[in-house]
Length: 205
Image 1 (tube, rainbow, N blue to C red):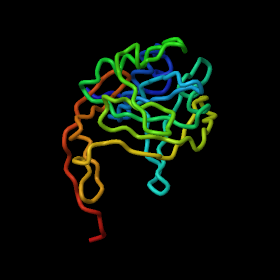
Image 2 (cartoon, helix red, strand yellow):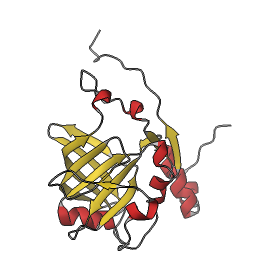
Image 3 (cartoon, rainbow, N blue to C red):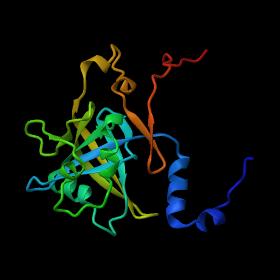
Image 4 (cartoon, helix red, strand yellow):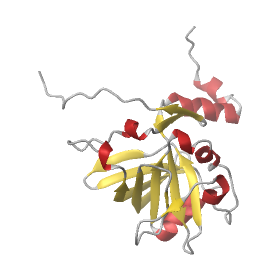
C-alpha cells in the first residue's frame, strides 16, 4: 500500500535511518571514487555519489561535500593542490571502493588501506584509481557554500579523461555500461548498469 510520509514524520526518524531514507529517494546515482593528494604527495581516496555534469563548454563537473564540522581530507587536499580525480566504480572494485568511505586517520592512505592502486598522469598531482576503467582529472574552479545546510558545492573543470577508446562511439557518446560500471542508491546499495536505449535528438513534430 502506498503511503504519504509527511515532513514531521521525516524529522522524527532516527538520524541514520533518515539519512538512508532521504539518500534513497533521488534514485540511482553514479558511484565514483575521488582521488586526491596533499601538498606533500600523501594520497587520499573517498566514495562519492553526488557527481553532476554542469556543462560541456567549458567542461564542468561538480560534487557535494558534507559540512566541515569534521575533517574533510579530500576537500583539504583539492583546495591545497587545485586538482583531483573522479573514478568510476566497477563490481570488481567492490567492496574495496565502499570501504574507502571509512573515516581513516589523515596519515593513512585509503589506497593502501583498501587495496586499490594509485596511478598518475604526467604533471598532474592527484592520483587516479588504476583499477577504474574511466577516470577524469579535474582542476578546481570554485567551492560554493550552500548556506541552508552547511554543505559545499565543489566545481571543477576537466583536465583529462582516461578510458578505453572502444567505448567512445562515433558521435562522442561514452557507453559506460560497456565498462561494467555500477550505480549507487541510498548509502550502500550498488547496482549493475545495463546498456540503455538511445533516441535521436528531439525535434518538434
